[in-house]
Length: 108
Ligand code: SF4
Ligand code: F3S
Image (cartoon, rainbow, N blue to C red; front, side):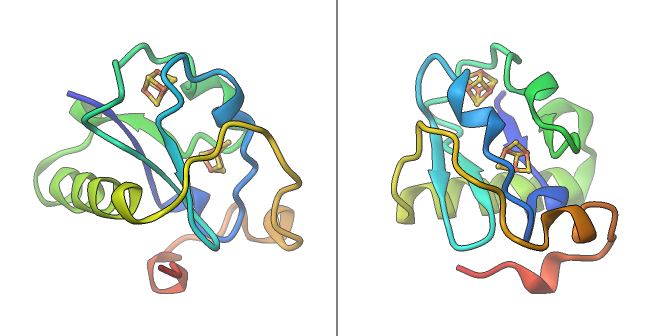
C-alpha cells in the first residue's frame, strides 16, 4: 500500500506535503505532484500537511478510482524530477482548489 496524490492537487500544487516526507518520494510536474508508490513508506504524515486534502491512503479509494490514481502516481513519479522543498503554489490555486473534475487539466 501507498499514499496517492489525487485530483485536488491539479493546478494548485501547494507543496506543503514535500517538506515532511521522510523518504522524499514526491515528484513534480507542471501542475501536479506524484508520489512514487515504491518509495512511499505509508507513514501518513503528508496527509494533514496538504491544505486541500489532496493526498489519500490508497486503501481509501475503491475499484477503478484506486487503479486510476495509482497508475498516475506510479507513471508520473518515474518521469518527473524529485521535489523536497516547498515553493509558491500555482497562481490560480486558491481559485481552483474547490473545483471538481480537473482531470483534463493535468499536464504531463
Ligand atoms: Fe512520504 Fe509518508 Fe506521505 Fe508516503 S505517506 S508520501 S512516505 S510522507
Ligand atoms: Fe498538491 Fe497538496 Fe502537496 S495541493 S502539492 S498534494 S500540499
